[in-house]
Length: 82
Image 1 (cartoon, rainbow, N blue to C red):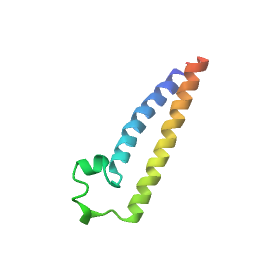
Image 2: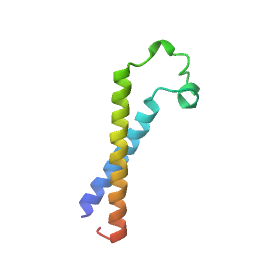
Image 3: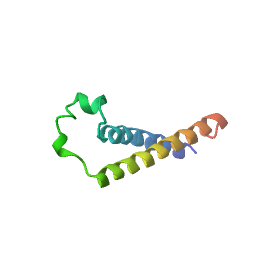
Image 4: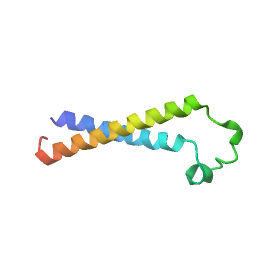
């Protein structure tokens, strides 16, 4: 069980970093981090609808994996399976 818990911790770290990157890649809708770094100036480089939808899907899937891993690790801690 210790190997599974270690693998889940590594997966949690990887998905956390990827989730942060995916959220920061989203197109700004006024204000926020995108505007702070000049997001309003690059209006000529609008992303296509397909790219934005794919980015949304990837972000949602990563979020679901992240939450699932946290729940499983919580169960490991709660019931002492480690």
